[in-house]
Amino acid sequence: MKNSKKLAILLFITALLFSCGSDNSDNENTTTTAANTTTTKQENNSKNAETKSQTENTIQGIRYGNDTVGYVTKPENWLEFTDPNSSPTAVQLSIDSANIVTLDILSKDAKANSEKAAYVLMQKYLNEGIPKENITLDPVDINGYQGTSLTIKYNDGTIMIVNCIDHEGKVYFISMEGLQNRQTLMEMANVIETWKPTK
Image (cartoon, rainbow, N blue to C red; front, side, top):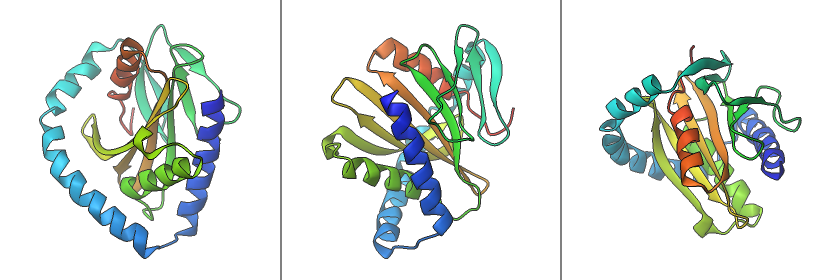
């Protein structure tokens, strides 16, 4: 639940930053560098697109989410999850109380992009004292949608992976948090790979 509270605060701060529309030239330079890196790595990600499409077809369940945050395929044995500290637009589902997938929206007005959103989130965690070596920022492709992924490894053995996805002027937030158990992480990742902005 500690991570869920951090997630709610993080979403609020991010939304506040984007709504203010601040333009910091240092952030723009960092964003440009991240964008160049993203372009190079996206070529490698496109090779995996066919495999990712197959993942969506192998998960049995119902489409879960809404038009604001997008949809994933919720396996039949997964639970609906509600964290009272999450943002009002967040939609959550989980394997259990420790391993949670969250869908949300960070920006709707084309003032931000996935690189900027992920960079702001990364700075927040660095300011909270998470060591830089425990945080990675990488390009990501989820079901054909491009963006930036932020991975945070906590000292208590948990991990949080936040995917910021660009689509039609919006930045979507698709995250998974939980224990660093390979099987559980793969199960959550397979669900995330089914994400689309529409049902």
